[in-house]
Image (cartoon, rainbow, N blue to C red):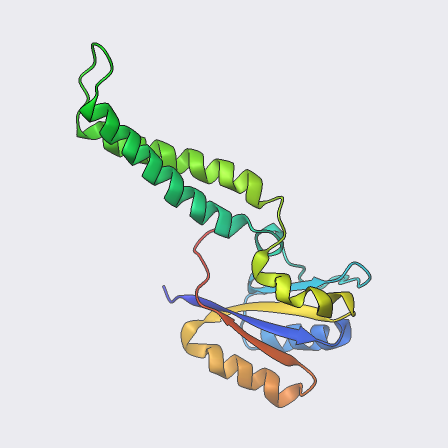
Length: 172
């Protein structure tokens, strides 16, 4: 499977957004790969609105929770081997199960926190969204990034191309 990159575009309004969504769909971009975000005063109606994974810090929080939880769990497993609880014999499985349990618990706790925080990667767009602009995020194959940027540039001079995000995680 090819990796995806997320493209960011600032659009002057929903009419331009509607035209670009139609063009992207005709270019075979799946509907689920198009995400729009607007300020409170702007209605997106039937346009593909950004979901919880795009609006919140859910994904980065899960990534951090997996790393920290897995590390702490592995460390706890090592401590259990070195200083086994009374009457128990701990082996290498303690490290494995500690790491897995810690990663799972860390991801769960971090997800609960991350879902309540706005997406820190989108903070730079807040002022534009409050002025009525619309943020479009499009997930495209890595090898077609320039093609899609050129498509937008050719047909919509009023659109601000805001760059890309390195990779899109496989979840959610």
